[in-house]
Length: 227
Image 1 (cartoon, rainbow, N blue to C red):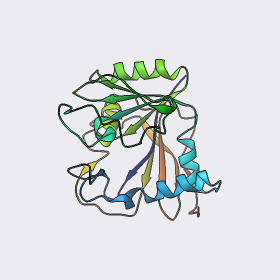
Image 2 (cartoon, helix red, strand yellow; image 1 turned 120 degrees about the vertical axis):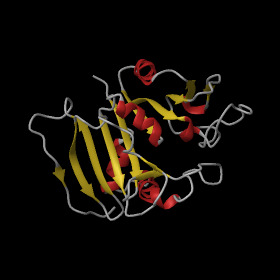
Image 3 (tube, rainbow, N blue to C red; image 1 turned 135 degrees about the vertical axis):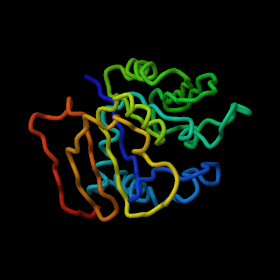
Image 4 (cartoon, rainbow, N blue to C red; image 1 turned 180 degrees about the vertical axis):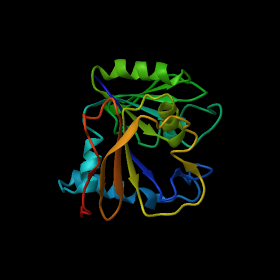
């Protein structure tokens, strides 16, 4: 059965995944610079260069058996409100890295944008259950991934739809912004940590819904390792 998965979601020690006032010159928001995601960018380069390591392993897992992606408008771009024009097609250039259907949550829909490499951005204001059903159909038997941002992940957690969640916790303090695990109510009930390993750059926690965990599964902890 296909799963809904979340990968490589980075949070600070005080739990923030995004800063305040995200915009073109501050895509992650004020208070959060690129260093929050340094572990991931380095791991992506190492993966492309054929190197191995803890961080590389988690980046590689995020690409396995994914047939569709869901994201929020905050991840797609820095603009809010009605589209002033439809020239913006995302942060990723003419050939985005997804190469499959992407469903973008927004209150202001627009026609589908088809990009090079097989990426189609579909803009939707439908409920999360409807969007997930569409994504599963588009994924054609593969898993669906939520790319972000925090508010979108929270919606699916509150609805109890996320099957697997990978958090990367980095040694930074942010102080203000958008916490990933706020406003969830009972949304984290039924999840358990099944893996906890660290590299010098990040501590990785993998949570799964108990219905997906193996009987008797417990936390697998690993030592610190280098990339």
